Length: 588
Image 1: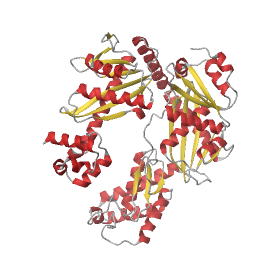
Image 2: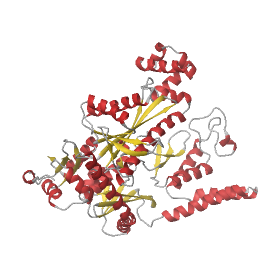
Image 3: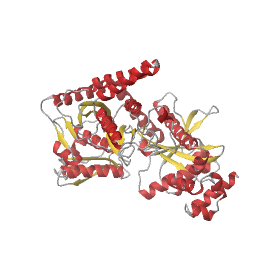
Image 4: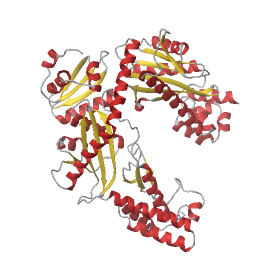
């Protein structure tokens, strides 16, 4: 651990953002502070444990940028985190966003479950979020059973089954009264806001009708729907005077862990809750704020209001999120805030022992790997694998682990040239493309590259890494005749003894299994689209847009095969057209 006493004495006591760097000059942590000197001193003068100790031991230098206000320092901090993706900053482990229910604004509206609302061009009202995706799907199913809305993505040429079973009004053929549609939509919106009376009344009518027709199975389905609605709303109902859409946020911090709890309140209903436990390297309020910024950025939608505990700076949060933020001192919402803290602590206590054990295993495994390879850092690991179909259509997959935790935001897929016909050629292309791109983009290099194999695979990787003048440790996971990993080989082709019952061996095997799964799933996903789609998808330079353009222009694989390079070049660039033609000609 370096001594920064002299440098710390020169740090001002003003607000700003600070950046910690490792020995390679890579930014490994970004934070902000009202008082830069006090915050930076705290890292090197207090006793630290766990992941915080790993950070401090990794720090070789630090820089800081003074700002005129705390809001400026917060904006700068988030900007730098997005730019550098420091490995010690908070990472949202769950790469999925919560689903919403959308009621579209169209001539013939539909009701459906949607995700990734941030990247989606929304066409209507959104209701949610629904932490329970199954509940969202059941709600949409009930609505579509009760209301004869449009069910298809695009209008059909003729009346379909939904019309004949009275679950669609036949929008494709019949002229439907606009007032009737608007009436249905208003009732649906009212139901999604918590008013269930109209929907349950309609379900009761359908249940009695089915019972009178002696269709008891259908009647039972309607009864289950009614019971489900009544039970859910009773469980969600909260006695509040506030009918706005707002979130309640609180946290619990202990042993360098932060448990964040968020309640989603919509129209007086508790739609759900979210909890996540993360390592806390900084002030818990600062860490909570960083987490909330990333969380809401991932979700894509902010609530109308936020209610938080006393520790938070509500003026700063209001300015940053551009919404009203409150910290009530009494009343029903204050009780909700206290309840959120109780839940945060309860979730931490339930998982405390498991989390501490897992973190200790990972920290010890990182140290063991560092000592085994005689390197100063073994934090970021990148592993590669290929997949193919009978020796053709190769694709590559790469996974990234930070301190033996998967960083799924950094996973990458590689579509390989159709001329690639063997594993080594595929691996050579993937390795080159990955690290040439990192060089050009000034990206973060890994500490270790893990190859799925022994001497031959390591030699291919060394060839590329040396040609790019990079200094990255390379190891291979060697398999026995039963295709099970039984040894580790370093870049000098020496076998490194690691007991199979150690955490290090288990973590490395986990990485190997994950990259294999990732590459295989990519290939299966392409193949599942069908013969034509998979062939086009596996040709470098052809993505979703160009594939659609080719299909729109030529209509079938046969006609694409028959087209000349000049004709194909009218749709895609000439270089891509040549590759496409060569690939399809080989199959004829």
